[in-house]
Image (cartoon, rainbow, N blue to C red; front, side, top):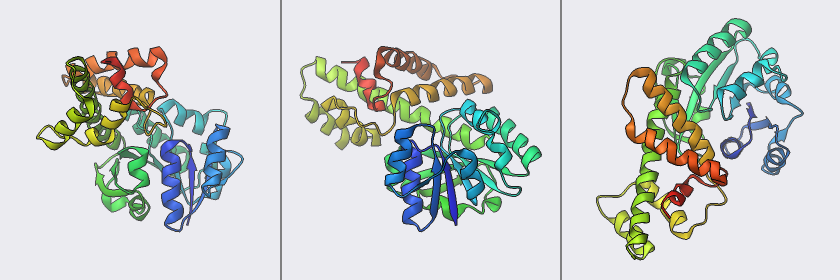
Length: 286
């Protein structure tokens, strides 16, 4: 089976590696030349544009940043919607506005006879590369003929019934990820000001009831101050936090901690730290 990927950033490349290792033939495209070159070095057959990828693939996977990127891809200058095959499935890993995926799914079905499914990934690109991610899917499990493909990078799949619900579930998950990082950063900032040895204090946090996974994945970066290369960028999480706040307001949920987090992370992005790993939230407490 030939899989096409549009968007060869951190996650796109991680999925491509897993697909290739599982025996799939992978084509791809990205607007950034360096992303295309890096993907080609991994064994991806990089094509001339997104339309060529859509035409050549049996299943198309999107790994973009925003709803606007998806709409520009399908209906903007690239006009990739015209290249979609009736009856085909597009798996969209983009963390975006849930209402947008619902609207775009309906439009793709009406105009192209294809299915657009949100398959949001819980876990960083590194977690996906190791095959340990969770797939949060806006579809019914009995309709998911693509389950074997998801198993190449996801240890478990959760189905939420309809388009957009995968995105909504991802926003709930990202709220927890973000606040876990924020709490760890604040605690290490307090420890540093109190004169504690940070590696020792991080070890204490990891060994006790305070433990969360981010202490192992992000704690060493905070202690060392080394935030490159990024596994997941600070600016990308800022975008996700904005979506969380928007979704919470839409459903009438109170998220005062996340609103505070949003202001902190926006300040860091404005200061030029957006391309760093999201562990750089620690810079707010140094």
